Length: 317
Image (cartoon, rainbow, N blue to C red; front, side, top):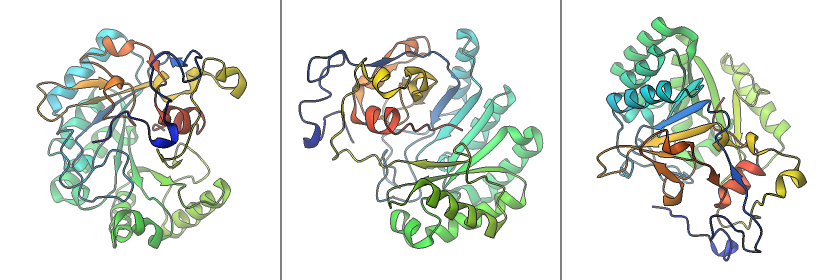
């Protein structure tokens, strides 16, 4: 599994939690507006992508299936801590590999939260038990459920280059089922192939129009285009002075508004992480409770700079 050791391009950087390599005070982020609590449902996936940040695969169970009871315990903590959470997010791996996925989703919807599920919309989601469960959730809770489907590129050959031959066709089949049954959908794409933001969104818009998908390609919440997380690229460390230089605020960074719950293989209980992007970096583990997870987060990783502060990306909608 990946750890927090910097690549050779960043040797000397990201060593001290509080001080950058050149002796400046490292930037930190406070949990100022908790809006989304993520649950990693497990790292097992039905496919193995060429560039998966969490190394999901049919054999990687470093993060094991979380249970509905464990999710409910954290939903209780949200109420106890008074967090103004709007949305519960489920990510993996492939969430629909988790046999309790429908129960996990129902637990969050029954508490009144909006729910976002990240999925490849392939065979795990299309199993009869999961489809029947989704239809029941759609019937009972309407538009508070969104499924964000991974479509790495609107061109099938580029999507398949990342996810394997035939993947695009299988994902398209799942999306058509979601469309025909009235589910709210969003899409997550990648920018690794280049092209401008406008070009990418125009391509997705044509794809959505061709298949009658009610997804707005121009809305970054409905069509999320992720910058590639390449740890071989040199990135600057973020200091406290950077906020003013960049014209940005720490309140805009993902860890100001979200946390993620994971359960590690062999662990007796789940833990809370600062970030969805760093599941294997020990220093971003904050404890077993939401109370502990209210601590500030030191931006001591290349992803903090490239993906969040400079890239401006967010995992939510």
